[in-house]
Image (tube, rainbow, N blue to C red; front, side, top):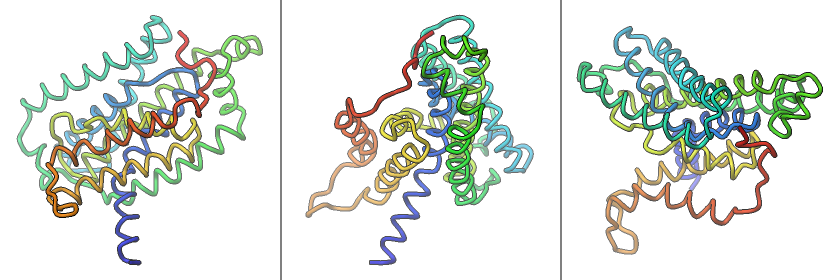
Length: 286
């Protein structure tokens, strides 16, 4: 039994680290008042950039740096669209997700096949990024609640007008929150292509950005809550791998059922949690 529990805990950490990193990133954006549906695209672009740079440079660390940079650049576009051009946040995020999917699919066909092969892309141990995610969880909590800059970010997310009246520049704060969210989502994507399953495939993030956003909501925009929810969803992802082909009470369930399990449980969890979570007051306002 002890061994079984250890296996499930390790599975939860392995399956949930990318979600944890991305949900912590989403928290920084949404605490500043910007909805970030684009987390999915930022993860995907980060995964792609990480695999490509790691493949050509033979350095997984450079690959991770590229993943962070790629996520940050796409997030900059989100900040530009929502804060300068006043595009509605959800529309901007969806557009960026489509751009990331199209660009990575197009480029993948024109690059060497080896980028899709785990044996040719240098990787890092998955647990090393799990440790990074846990450290970031604590750092973000302390920063948000006990430092002037963190409190300013929350003030902008709760009431941008009042924050401006006391000399805070809401636009500048939101740029920081959104770009930081993209960098963390990019790192989450880099985890997928350089640690969990080295190599890149089309639509590799497979909706994980949306699930990270759900974890953020279930975690009530709190770093510890978001991380805990992300790890719980990570366990579902791992269970999906373990349970495929395993009969339940003598019934062989189709593979599609197990593949859809994380998304199905996400919908159920959000429906059950409706109304119990209070977002930042200015969230989504352009």
